[in-house]
Length: 183
DNA sequence: GTTCCGATGTACT
DNA sequence: GTACATCGGAACG
Image 1 (cartoon, rainbow, N blue to C red):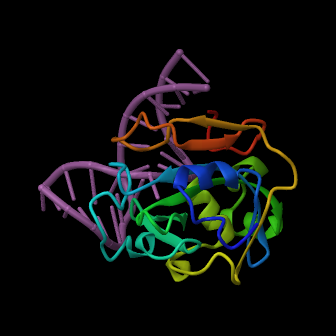
Image 2: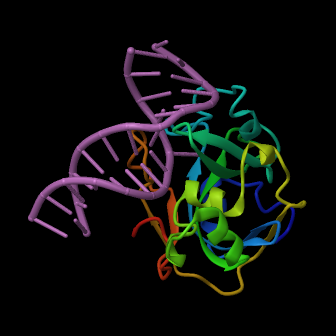
Image 3: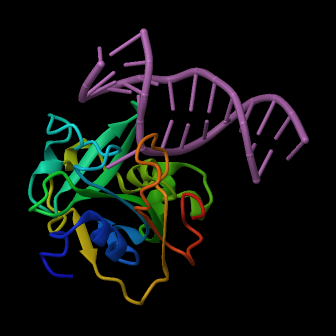
């Protein structure tokens, strides 16, 4: 994976990330579910312009955008497309492969398939919080690398939004048992 | 399996 | 005051 991987449209990055390996301090796994957002998209935090919270979305590609949702969970995005500021990919689910014992400690007693099967769960399992907002994905504590094989990427509508609901910018590994829900 | 609901920080009307 | 890129538990079938 080269350093310009994220410097293209969010939907391109979102599809290309399926199967990639993501670690935070050595804990993580295979990305199996993503969603794309950009500044022309009414469901995106960047749609109404830059604010203190979403400032990372308007910065350079390859940085983390981490925000609190519903007052208690964190969501983790990676910023895309330098020429169209305000685009990012939400990482929604991982297949746990590394540091699974730490995930269980942080998440409590849950089945392996529920350790990282949603954006809030994934952040709790990998201990992603506001301290990583704006951090480069190419530097510690992050580590990211390309997919080993060729996953069966399927596309569908995004989850949990009330506008832009028909934009099919959710991408999953169709064979994965670790999704937040089926496509 | 499904639906309903409470938790509660931050942005915005 | 209202909405929100969520989650887990309770109630129900």
